[in-house]
Amino acid sequence: MQGLVQAMQTQAQTQAALQAQLQAQAQAPAPVPQKHGHGGPSIMERFKRMAPPSFKGESQPLLAESWKREVEKIF
Picture 1 (cartoon, rainbow, N blue to C red):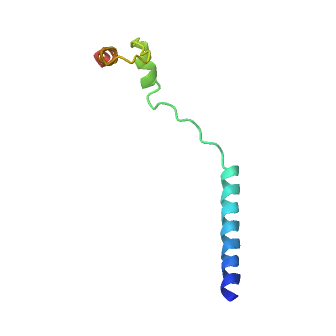
Picture 2: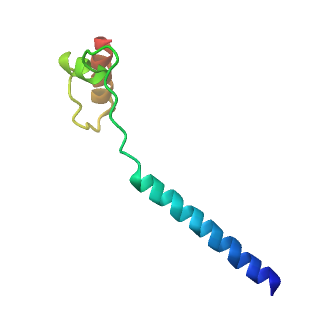
Picture 3: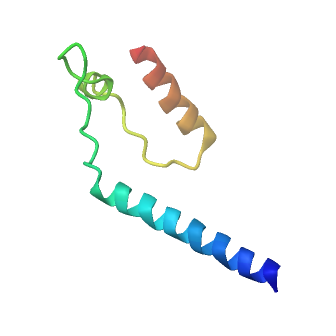
């Protein structure tokens, strides 16, 4: 019986600690998105400016390989 009481006390303490953590997380401010350190366009924006060919989900391996080569030319 003593073991059961101790287990219930441990469970209650664990539950209280978990609840406190959840409340702390709910009250924490949302993370602020980081700006680029250099102030310029992101890598994705620069990539899009290069007008890469779009991939249309072709099922033919040769077309996919051709698309891949065209994209690699950008770099």
